[in-house]
Length: 159
Ligand SMILES: Cc1cc2nc3c(=O)[nH]c(=O)nc-3n(C[C@H](O)[C@H](O)[C@H](O)COP(=O)(O)OP(=O)(O)OC[C@H]3O[C@@H](n4cnc5c(N)ncnc54)[C@H](O)[C@@H]3O)c2cc1C
Image 1 (cartoon, rainbow, N blue to C red):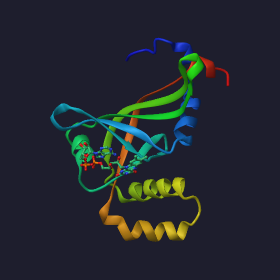
Image 2 (cartoon, protein in one colour):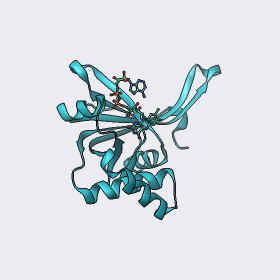
Image 3 (cartoon, protein in one colour):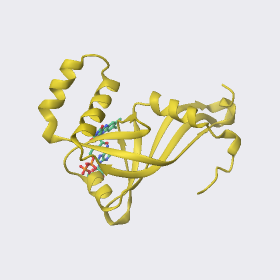
Image 4 (cartoon, rainbow, N blue to C red):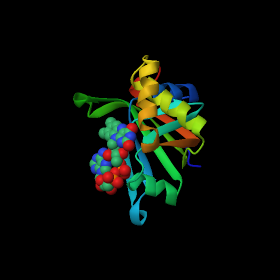
């Protein structure tokens, strides 16, 4: 495991979780076609300490995780450019882990429900109908974290 060089800028586990809960998108990095890194933006939800994604039934990212489950997911919490200081006040989190298609229908239902509720809170009946209507046409994918790191610009420390 690689340690963060500027460890004082590291976020705590609770701060990492807060960033992941605030975020509405991130970039999933997988080992794509021919071993070429494939980094693709996605929506997500954090549930039971794992991340869940909604995938189509086919495509580059699905083929990638089926061939090699190793993946990482990066969420940028803040990217404030400060031109006069030639810097950016940043905060971000990276989750490293293994990805797998969710086979269990109960887990699939819970995770898609949580994902939909994150992006459209309320409307449980409408959400259930939407999920039922497209049930066979989507996959849920879990990223089980093995390591989570967060880092912020030194200017944001203590804020
Ligand atoms: C903020 C955001 C949130 C998103 N949320 C979701 C989500 O929750 N679920 C979901 O399935 N998709 C989401 N997308 C779309 C997602 O980025 C992919 O386009 C989509 O999932 C298809 O991926 P694929 O690997 O199956 O595509 P494929 O069509 O199999 O990819 C083929 C090629 O197309 C190119 N490509 C695919 N997607 C992109 C892209 N976004 N940008 C540039 N080139 C691309 C790549 O070169 C890739 O190798 C989101 C996109 C954004 C920007």
